[in-house]
Length: 157
Length: 198
Image 1: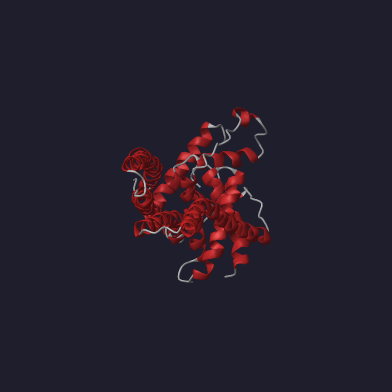
Image 2 (image 1 turned 135 degrees about the vertical axis):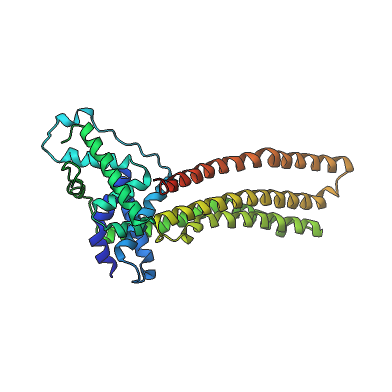
């Protein structure tokens, strides 16, 4: 597969994964770009024995985990409290809330739920993070429960 | 879905990130390579300059004794060793496989940090030992031409300085490096434990 194709097809997916991880637009852009730099460097070594998606997502999620080391303390901009009073029917706040809540989860949960919402198959998720499929299923269920609860507490339907 | 109809997937997918065009990405790649190189050069310049200065002394003053020559070589070697270890730190990350699973990746990161901790401590001690030994040997030729009193005085001052470095600066530096690495190691381990819950 050519790099250009991978870049075109996966950019938004990888960007969202990073955005879910850090909930900071600029930082997510940086991490996503870094990811593709690594993809570009590693591509000659890619053998077709694994799925290209799994391969790209592994690089991306590992790169997210590397952020722990960079320790650029991310100051998460708090959402305004009166958010729900603003245009309730607009989807915007919902997107912001979802990403905010996800970025507040434990590191590995952020990656798992991001992949799930990206509609990556659960078997593949298991293969990306290195857990059993059964485990992944349980985790996803719990994370979704947690997110739903948080949404409700925030008055979103 | 059974989550009372909150369709997270639809919300999730509405987030879009501006995609830089591919030339921009390639530029970033070049910049990244350049800045890495620059970082390495800057960190090495001081040590290289010192080594250069020592070589200049060798040529200019033409030491007679073998001790002075060994001293000079030891000092330069100490610096080159340190430089080598320092530069290696930057490159070790390239040896981690980015394409393994997250859980394996976290384990490799932990192993790497533990190794780094060991190397830093050993290298720093080795650096100080070689440097001190080199200086003491180098001094011998010049102190042997002094009166006994001044020779002892010169050595006493040097030893005090070396002792200060060994007993104060070295442990302090090691502690500083280790605290930072220990924090990282424990953080990696915590994250990795998240996999084992349930």
